[in-house]
Every structure is written in C-alpha cells, then in structure tokens.
Amino acid sequence: MWRVYSRLLFYLNINLSLSKSGLTSLKSVTMKIKRIYEDPEPADGYRVLVDRLWPRGIKKETAQIDEWIKEIAPSAELRKWFQHKPERFEEFRKKYKQELKAHQSELKRLKAIDSKQNLTLLYSAKNEQFNQAVVLEDVLKKIQ
Image 1 (cartoon, one colour):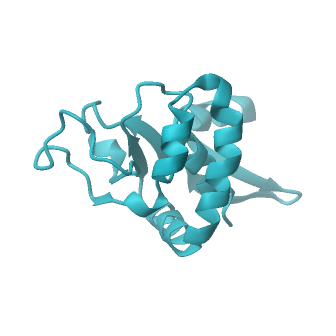
Image 2 (tube, one colour):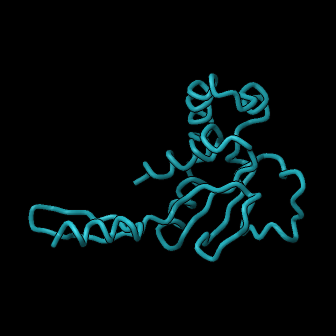
C-alpha cells in the first residue's frame, strides 16, 4: 500500500521527508526552469527572467514575468566566453557559481519565494541542458 501512495505522491511532484518515527514533513517541489518562449501556465507561479539581455522576439507587455533579475545572470564576459557550447559547460558552471556567491541576498530571496509558491526560472537559450538556469536552479535547491 505504501508503494502506491509514494508513487502517487511522486507523480504529483510532492517530496516526502521521512524519519525513524515516520512521516515528518510534506513539501511541494515548486521550482522549475523553462524557456521564456514557452507559453506561460498558471502552474508556473512566480516567473523570473534570469537572462542579462532581454530575449529576442518577446514583447515586455506579453512576457508575463513577475521579475527580471539581470544581476544574477552570468556576467557579459562569462556569457560571451561560454557561447552555449556543451564542451564548455562544466567550466561555465564553476565560474558562474563563483559569480553567484556575490548575490547571496538575491538567492535567499528567491529561495524564500520558492518556499511559499511555485517558482519558474525563465531563460532564452536554445539549449535546454546547457544554460545558466540549470546552474541557478541547482544552486537554489541547495540553499537551506
């Protein structure tokens, strides 16, 4: 019976935290990343653009973003060096994480938003695996 419940909760994107005494907390998994070119959905919750440059072809009036945080996007130098080349991604990840250390208050604020509602990090890169939002999501999920 437990297997059925845990599978159901998994499909509903719910995380269970178990201890020796049993179920101790229930927390929704609310953070996700998404290309800004994808249609907004109610489940996106708080939508944050994490690119330094405004995405091509998107009108600010129709973007349906709650916030644009240029400061936590990779620096212009790092972005130009990376050029979204998969072979540079691991080095990009390291350098970008270093840059993010200077923005702890912003990261904690985003984490607080995530703890209260769905949070969607928006990016414009074509590559869905090798971009700054992937790194940022990982960093935010590790913040206590």
